[in-house]
Every structure is written in structure tokens, then in C-alpha cells.
Amino acid sequence: MNGEDCLKMARRNNFENVLLDTLPNPIYYKSIKGNFIKCNTHFAKLANISKEEVVGKTAYDFFPKDVANRNKIIDAKIMKTLQPLDDEIYFDTKNGNRRYYNLNKAVCFNENNEIAGIVCIMTDMTERTKIQESFIQRSKFLELGELIASIAHQWNEPLVELSAQIQKVAFSYKNNKINKKEVSEFVKDSMTQIQYMSETLTDFRNFLIPSSVKNKFGIKKSIEEIFKIIGKDIFYSNIQIKYEYKNKEEVFVYGFKNEVKQVLLNIINNAKTKIINICKKHDFKGIITIKVSQNKNNCIVNIIDNAGAIDSDIIDLVFNPYFTTKNNGTGIGLYMAKVIIEDRMSGKVSVKNKNQNVIFKIQMPLQGLDIENITPRR
Image: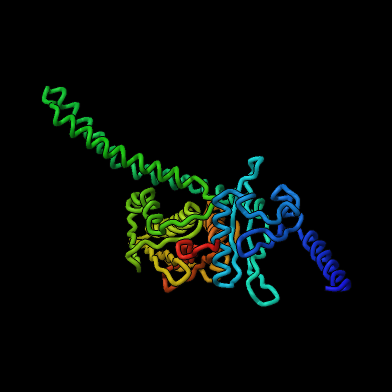
């Protein structure tokens, strides 16, 4: 290489460095083996060392092990498929603050068109994520009235059963007829009822906990957990629930479990309210049908009620913030459903009329990265 070529290369490298440092996002290049080749100032600041010190190190030197492991799997997938990939990560900084980042990764090639490594652009999503989580929790707490009423229905039968058991034991004791067997049966039956009530409270408590990290979870189990809380309330409202599961096996979704349960609960409660209002006016058999299926990439949940179509002039507005047809409604629930499914999980939620039925369709990504079938390069 002559002097002129060296000068051109130096100028090009200087231009690249200036360009990278001008961009507000943390950016880095990694080799096939996962060693950092180059980064900009913003990534070095995030790693809390100089750009020169970043070179040669790996993600394990800067980030928690689980984050580094996930990055390694993502890189292996990209180099296997040669397709760009978006992902979300979070980690806790040394001062205890949690940061959320969106990663846009792609393969880079050398002059021989061979894989040279990975380029990544990181986007800080922390403030946006925290604002979304705040709104989601707010909308979740707006459901508390409905949930507490549901728990009251769930507890009614076991409380009646416990009351009867206590009276029975008290009567036996008064008449000196109580024995060891009867006491044992009383304890056993009472603990069964108490366990049932305890599980209802646990499901309620778990529902209130925000899901800040995406995980793999079963959609059928989530639906079952919802109806553990609201099942009796639905039953006493004289509403029939139909389940139609296309697959006998569980369908696993990759996303925010409690927030998905919040979406399902909101749509189901809206359908319940519609049916109850109709039943107040005339005899009506309300039915809510829940269908679960899947295609290659998505889990599909359809929630269908037979309480009449949504007016054509408002059906396109139901997901707008603060739009509501209820007297005491907030207009937050369905808007948050759209935020959770579409913005936070890259899914899709929609609504349509079919005769006198309303169909809410929720599409969610399945398991995310196929971790089991990817072997990271050494």
C-alpha cells in the first residue's frame, strides 16, 4: 500500500469515526467470534470505558450474563439466516437504574462477500417503556372494581361451605357426638375451601404485578387463570362461555404475560357488560366464545360475543384513547390493548362485526427466538 492509499484510508476511517460519533445511538461492530471491532462514543459511554478499551472485548465484559447469552444467540441466528433482526433487552446499570434498549442487528460482509461480523444500532427505549408501563398499570387498576366483584363471587360458595361445616361441628360438639374422624374430615374439607380461596387471591395478586420483561408463556393457561378470577361472576351473570381450541397442545406466546391477560380480561369484561345490559331489557342468552389457534408465526385469539354489532360509525374509533360508549367509562382499556399487543409485542389487534356478533382478533408472536435450535458459534 503506497502513501496515497494510506492517506485515503486514514481519511475514510476519520470520516467513519466522526459519522458514528455524530449519531445519537450506541453503535458497534462485532466479529464472527463476538469480539468488538469498533464502536462509537455513545456505546463506549454506555459501557463506561473508552472506545479503545472496547475493542477485543465481548458482551460478557459489559452486560449481565443473561443479556450477553441472548445477544450470542441473536448473533448466531442472524449469521445463520443472513436476515436482519430486531430484539429488545434490558439491564440494570451499576447505579441501579434499569435501561431498556431496542437492538437492530444485521450481518456485515467483507470485500470477498464473506460474513465479517455483526453491526448493531441500539435505541434507548427506557423513557417510552416507563411511560407505557405507567399507563398500563393505570388501566389495570381501573379494572379493580370488576375484579373485586368477581372475587366476591368466587368466594361465595367456599364461604357458605365453610359456614355449614362449622355449624355441623358445633352441633356435634354440643350434643357430645364429635369424634376424631369427624374432626379430621372437617379439617380436610375446610383446608380444601381455604386453599381454593388462597389460589384466587394469588391469581389476583399475580395479575397486578407488571410484566416488564418478555417471556414465553402458555395462552391457554393464561385464559384459565383469568377465569379462575372472573368465572363465577360470568356464571352468575347467566353468560355461557365456549372454548374452541384448534390445537390440543398448549400454544406458547412470547411477550408480556400479565399484560396479555389484562387485554383478554378487558375485552371479556366489555362483552359481559354488553350482554348484561341486553338482559336487563329482555330475555337473552348471552354467549362469549374464545377461539385459540396458530399459524406459522402467530398465536391467534378470537373473542366473540353475540350481544349485537358495533355501530358502523364508531367501530373504527374503539381503540382511540379516551373513546368510550359507557356512562362511567374511561376509554383507556382498548387503547391500552392496542399499545400492549402492537407497540410492545409487535402483534395485531382488530375488531369487526359478523352479523350480530362482534369479533376481537388478537395476533401475538409465538416463541420468539428459537433458542433450542440455534448453536452459537464459538
